[in-house]
Every structure is written in C-alpha cells, then in structure tokens.
Amino acid sequence: MKRISKAASTLITVLGLAAMLGGILVYGLSSKEIIELSHPGFVALIASVLGIGLITCGVCDLLVRKRTEEELELEIEMNDERNIALSNAAMASGFKVLSVVLAAVVVILAYAGQLSAVSCLIIIGAYFVGQIAFIAKLWYLHKTM
Image 1 (cartoon, one colour):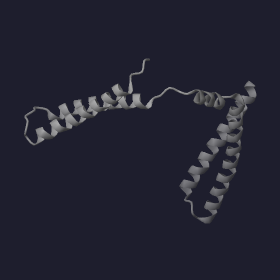
Image 2 (cartoon, helix red, strand yellow):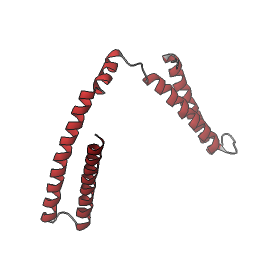
Image 3 (cartoon, rainbow, N blue to C red):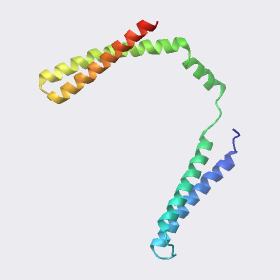
Image 4 (cartoon, one colour):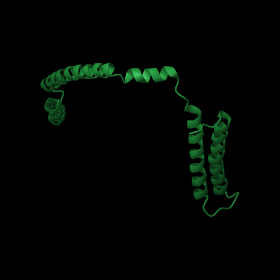
C-alpha cells in the first residue's frame, strides 16, 4: 500500500473537519429557519459521517509510520521462545500467589463479617472455576506432551 504525503493527509483531515462543521452549520441555520430544508437532520448526519470518516482516514495516515529497525528487533526479542517461556513461568508464579491470597482474603472477610453470603459464594465459585481450568489444562498438557 502506497502512503500518501503528510500534506495530503493533513488536507484530508481539514476537509473532514470542514464537512462535519458544515453539516452542523446547515443544521443550525435550518433550525433557526435561516435556510429551508425538508430534512436538515439527514443532511447533518450525512455530512457528519463523511467528515468523521475523512478525519479518521487523515489522522490515521498521519499517525501510522514505518517501523524502524530497532522496533523490529524489539518485536523479535519479545517473540523469542526463551522470553515466552520466562513470561509463562512468571504468569504461573503469579497464579499461585493469586490463588493463595484470594483464598486467604475470602476466609478473612467471611469470618470478619464483611462479606455477604452471596458475594462470598460468587467469589468462591470464581476461584473454583479458575482452579478447575488450571487442572483441566494441566491434564490436557500432560496427555499431549
């Protein structure tokens, strides 16, 4: 896809803004009965949609830029197998800590009387869904690997 110049993107953005403001102006002039239109809301809607589309195209074209070599190297580094394995190990450790802390907090709040029966059961249900998902995935991975 060929990129257009910054000047063209800026012009598209300005035209979109003009179309949107023109639609709003036509609607305002029609509501004050300065000009007569049978459906001023329809004209304003069409002009606004067209303007928003042009603004979006122009701004996106201005903001999108080619990736530099440093960004490509960073993306390769992030998708490296070692880094993915380290990330998964960190998530597993975080899941263990979250499980213990969540269970402790539910018990503490329940015994302190700060947790209603319904909310306590909902939290315990969510906790068990997480644990069951973990056990099911672990069982699946042991079977397939």
